[in-house]
Image 1 (spheres, helix red, strand yellow):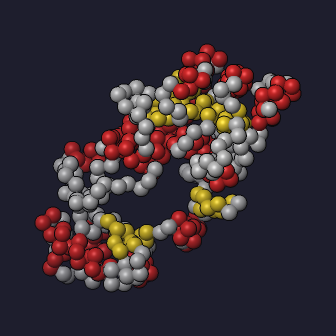
Image 2 (cartoon, one colour; image 1 turned 180 degrees about the horizontal axis):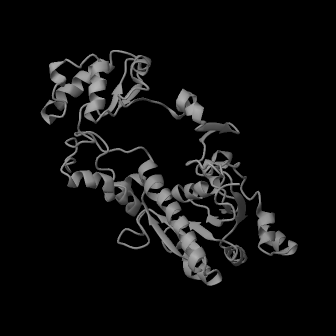
Length: 374
């Protein structure tokens, strides 16, 4: 069993970061009861069925939360839960009768985790948005891209998952520890604008030290010519990250540029445009495999840019078993790894697969269950 064995989580089905947070907890052994909408829309592109990796390891209860009896059943489950996770717009859970006040009245030890983009309060709290909007406003998108190009970060990773799901998971676990120590639950307001802004503190430290200007393309991490991705002759890409002098010296030596006059002062920003152009031409002259053979495994801070399917087959990733396939779905194994309680991902449930057993555990009789599920 996982490290979170015995932690009971009630998750109200939603999109993106909230269910991903639930997956993280389920991977670590928490018991997740997923309350999904009964029936669902036919052909709904957001209903991923068995492909919904974020639902792995959870049990599914399908209810119509517009039915007061269903709300009462959820509140009965709240009484047995340590955590509730929801990712609705502010006010939706309150209108359903499942807001923090109602739930904490039934279970004062409950940790009520709320996941939104803009937060529970503020001028934008009720506005629609997505990952790119939240990280644009928080400042986290600013350094994503070279000067003269539109900033673009990897979809969902920086905001929804990094600034959202991970911060919600950390807040929930901290809340559970506090509830167990003090007998009192609380509300966790996890906003992607907050989390993604918090993730900027390392960059802001470098900025304060004078090494990362607010102007894009002029700093230590987004300016040096050799730090970035390069196109190869076969259409594939490689990445170079040799920032430190000893690593960049090794990189240039391996590329046959160690004695080249242009590379004698690589930290002089006036040379960066020229040096970047030369490296682009150099890497574009050979296929990715050539650069892998020359640079991989050295301190030149190199890696090929791989698709997830390619990453699964890479010797290093395969040795660690990072990816696996279940029911034809490629997915990544749980992280991080625990020495005593290794995490093992569970299967993805069908919608409502566990409805009867969950409602019975909540104390409902056969007649009440049959009526509710009908």
